Length: 452
Image (cartoon, rainbow, N blue to C red; front, side):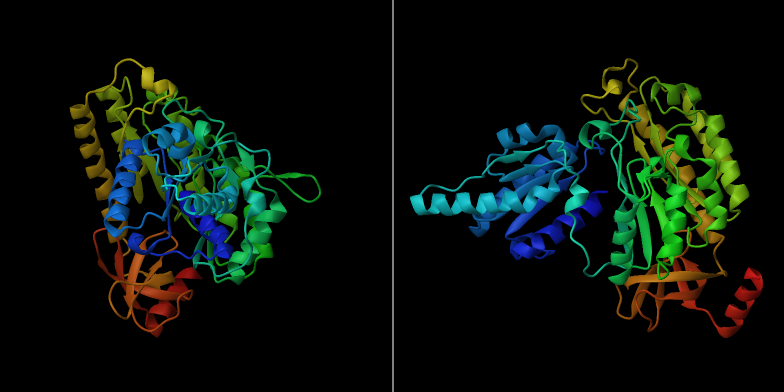
């Protein structure tokens, strides 16, 4: 979602003459778009602000506008203004559509200060409201799109997991109208997108209003995008909640060819006791049943997940249950983290906090298992011919990088166009990627026979 928000902010600033640069030393404006999920998020923001301050001082670039956006801004906006008085703008994730207005205010204020001979400091504009209007109502339309594009369809969270700050920084669940999503998907495809990932904090909780007043779920939206946007080759969605994997969505995985056979479905723990303490609102049996039914609907589906180790009160037995679930399920990839305290969340005040050394040991053991499963999944691709969507140039001259239907990164050499889907034989493994060669006629014939 932060990647999506960053792209939209760049589009909103374009009419003011701004364009992205990879070098902060060239920038007239620097925006830190922050996430509050990771450990020590606010400390990292202040550290980065200190680095930027020193860089601007060394270059004599006192006129650079500095903004802090996103979830850390939402949660700690007043503290950012207090501790970093040279920051000009602080805005939460629901108000980035107001960024052009805030930039204009900063520019006017600076011009007035210069005219008065006043020493420039940050403007200290703070906007972390949850406004009545939706930020999605102010999105630019059209323009060039990446081959693999993001499209936010839902935002916010009503689940209130005890470890998570998202309900407090992103607000309540909100689903965009169907017509707006279809229109944006068409614009993305017209701009060059061939794959769209539908985004939401709980994307499969999507319940958007259609033109006739009916309410659509995620499965119906996916089917409509597949039917109404013919040049859209691939559809994905993230992030999902096990509680919201309904029958219609599971069936769509077996019935919509454009819906890729890869699903990120966070479980967090393999212990029912810990899931209850996390307020996840589902148990392990439900998770197992969802996985079983997904594989019945689409036998080649690959799975990804999130895991937290060392949640307050987690015992060795609870952790062993997580390892058992991983071995039983088999994941193509996964994200795993040590539990870290998020101020203001219920888990922050829970007793029986797990010692850091124990968290470290458990995380290392879990990651060893997950990394081995990812290597095994990738190794099973050796010798296979798979359709790869070419997304961007690689690091070496003449190299291209694309993705398989299972979201594996593949590097190939050869002259092909970005945006093409080409049949590729997998010939070697990298650490977390694959190396391929363009398939021969014989390879392609064999692939066609296998598909038939």
